[in-house]
Each structure stands twice: as C-alpha cells, then as structure tokens.
Length: 338
Image 1 (cartoon, helix red, strand yellow):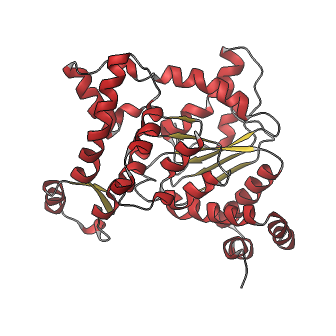
Image 2: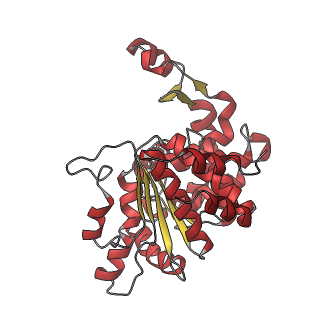
C-alpha cells in the first residue's frame, strides 16, 4: 500500500474543475514551504465546531501553518470541543427539523450549529469558571492582553482531567504551545465576547484589559514583516468576512499608511461556497485584490468553490504526508505532472 494514500488519491483523481484547483493549490502550497516560505491561515465559519482541529492541530505542530486569523467563535469553539466533546449532540437530519424541534434544542440548553450542537453548561459555563477570574485579576493589576492571549493561558490552565476531547485534536492547544502569531478580529460577537461585554456593563471589569482591533493590526505589522522574510508568507483563507479581510489588509496598510516596504502575499487560496457576486467580499475573485495592492498578477491564486469541511482536511492530510517524506512526495508529484 502507498505510504501517501491521500496525496496519491488527489494527484491521481483530481483532474478538472474544483478538484483540479484543489490539486494545484496543494502542490503550490507544498512548493512554497519547500522554498522556505510560510503560510497564514484564516478561519471563518464554524470550522472548530466541525472539528477541523483533527487535521489543523497536527499541521500546526508540524510547522505547516505559521499564523492564524480566527473569528472569536472559532477560537472559543476549539476550547469547547476540548472540554465538552462528550456532551455535544448531533442532528444528522437537521434539514428536516421543525421550529418546534429547535425550540426543544434551546430548552435542552444546547446551541445548534448546523448538524451539531454545543452544550451550554458543559462548554460555556464550565469555561466561564476559569476565564472570569482571569479577567478579574487582569482588571485588578491592569494587565492588558490580546484576546487570544487570554485563551492561550486559559487552555494551559484547565486541568487535563477536565478534557473530554482528544487534546491532540485541539488546534488551540497546538497554537498555544507554539505561541503562534494570531489575530482575532471582531471577537466581540463571540459567546465569550458577549459575556465579557456583560461584565463590563455591570462594572466588573475594565474593557481596556483586552487590546483593541486597532492594536491587533499594529501588532500584525510587525508579525507580517517577520513572517514574510525570505520566500514570503502565503494566505490560506477559509470562508470570507472579517477573519480574511482583516489580515490581508496588512500589506497595503504597511505600504500606504506606514509608508514602508512590504512584500506582497506570496500565495493565495480561498475555500468558499460563496458564489461570485456583486459587492461580496467572500465572493470576490482574487484579481480584485490586485487593485487593492493585496496580491499581484504573479501571485499564485486559487479559489476552491467547495465545502471547507471536506477540502481543508484533505489538503492538510496530504501536506502532512509530504512533510513526513519530502523526497517521496516530490517523486510522486513529478510522476503525476500534467
């Protein structure tokens, strides 16, 4: 049997349409890494609830991912899967649920995300017991941190006996262990962003203990400059929205606002089921980003119009195979060259 079944499957079967783009994006990603380049990922949608961490976490540990922009929801939901995985409830027939069925789910203290649901007590309330004292202490001593830094500390603080999911499947744990550069734009609309806001409203905490989105961008100027050294850093985007739009803006902002030199993004790939449409960021073609000086006409660009819960694990699994045996991977890719 092949030691690289996923890579061989993609190379042998993905010949046209979105399959072709998936194969080409995978090969270009691998070539970029081999040239000494790095890759920055953006996580929109509910990828953590969909358990992307099963492949994302080992990819972080193997050095295939060098920075992340995550929504607040994806950040916290990676933690929820770690502490409450056994209490999640799935709804495979979610398309046929009635309003009364969803009302029952609400009354059962579950929060549905497509075909699965997050248990309020085992996830939200369990984590709340740990993070609220952290916010209280930060207010008391005037310690200001980025949103993800609280979660990096939090995921290291929660005792192992509280883990109900596989720690190896938690991308947040992997990112915290690597102290991975991260931005969490718009974290206010997440569950814990709301919880934090409620405590600020009650006067329990100072809102200033969490650094702002503007400070995230100012920090990203430095992180991008560091990561783009050498062969540069690529941009791998899942979905659209603020998780993607926020970090990709760093290049033109360095150039036009700071008036400093900045390398363009060295690679671009987006997995999205958003169709090309008027005025939509998620549905915009990569060429449009050239006009905003985010990409250039020589940037390798790929748009995979598919379900990221299918495509991303496939690409990550193939890359992990490549990383395990680079010489064999390159030989296989060359044998399937078209």
